[in-house]
Length: 255
Image (cartoon, rainbow, N blue to C red; front, side, top):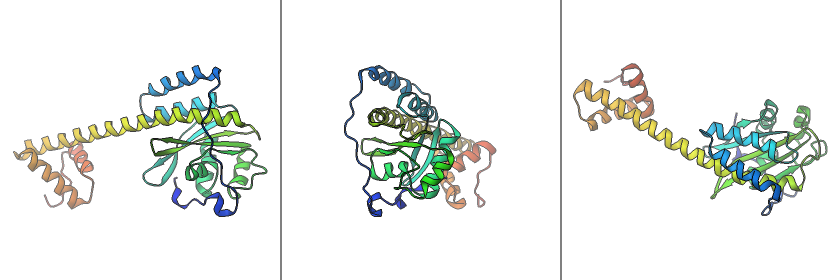
């Protein structure tokens, strides 16, 4: 299930201070090698799903205080859904945020900042979310925006079953981690779009070839047949092409 981030209420609209922005982070010397290895590891993943799973797994191992992690990814213009999680627990907590329309993740996305929830039991900023999160066993949370070149990709949600698990160090390390994660994620998304474009082009080419051979028409005429079938059946051109390749039938009732 996804949530419409356009409907999220900002903290200041409820008369409470909004989450603060976190400034540039400094990486402790001991983490420099870790982040270098992390960058190489994420860029070596074979696809978007593997990259997202790699991000949540590495986040738990890297960010101090994190026991579980999840990625809330922006899809389309305003939809958000969880694309990867380290455990079912993380998916469940994310879903509570989507159901209630509030929580650290959604605030991080709407305010474009890092948000820390130190103690679910005493937190007042998200009155609908926190009681249900407490029932699931959440003690504290940290949400970090994934952002690259003016593009808001989503948020990295970090969870602990203990209150006060996330510190200033957690925020600084999480911010640097999110930078590497966002770059790897953006690259994986670009590669996925490119692969999809190639697949669509090849599929339409196969469909054109079938029509050219069957009806002895030119490539342009075959494409026109596909376009007309798409318009007449109110289906996408790629769906018409796939149906033709798989079944040999052109999905146009007026053909």
